[in-house]
Image (tube, rainbow, N blue to C red; front, side):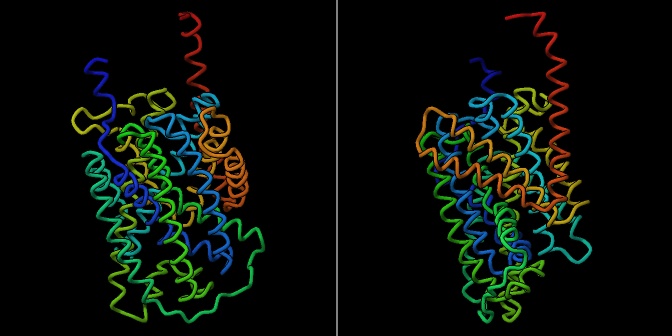
Length: 417
């Protein structure tokens, strides 16, 4: 392989601990500070059942991703797995679903950060500035991303532990089920948004050392830690605010800490850091999938460039940042969460189907059947407007690929290999 070709490869610099912290940074900001309120609106106290359902589906998806990543240690995650196991169109479906879902996640994290720290009326400009700043950090290199993720995760866990331990526990959990079983499934779909950060680990196949060992271990460790944290936080928020209070809150931790003024700055700092950590990892993850798709011409090939000095897909990440800036200036937080869940659940549907098809198997097939059924069950409960928007954007992507493949077909036929 020549020098020019080597420069287009990402560099293996990260170990298991780095990957775990990047995965935690992707998940903790999303779930703790953004998803519990809409889940409470859908299911009341039964959101804890929704959380358990989301955790089971996430675990199946995580094991599917781990099994696939061990065989395909390259950037792109399920986009690559779908192409290799099921065919190019399946890979495109997964990759495009991931890109649109995670782009919405980036917007959700930037808005969450701004709602906690920005003066009233300045939330959207502050969110846009956060996106620009973290895109710059990512472009400077993946080792800087991993270092920042470690610092953020440690500080966020400290803030969460302090806040949860100090919350008042005055509200009994309400047994009422506002919207029936559908509401529980919808809460699970919304809370799934909180777990989807482990996909970031699977997209790092070209950047971790010994990926066949590192990626499966890092995914399982990061997900296990996150499930425990979410369960503790979910019970704490419901006990402090009650289901109705949690459903109506745009800043649940601040509201829960209102009786202890000294907690408010700790909670605000934790929310800001968690959201920034998730945003940092999400920008990197979407950039890697965009890189993989551009390499196959499923997205414009100019997005597939790797920076010769910093070893990152800089064009993909800068283009993503530009799109996210537009989103944070135009959409609301809850719409972003629903749209993200729609795209990411479809992405993991392909992951489970790919793992079912895979010959080199580490885990029982039943796990992947359960994961696929769970993804379908949750995606149809996502808010209707999010489904409609997601279907429209998926259609645009499919139209692009169809036109591109039809345009390339004559040249392939006239120059057989």
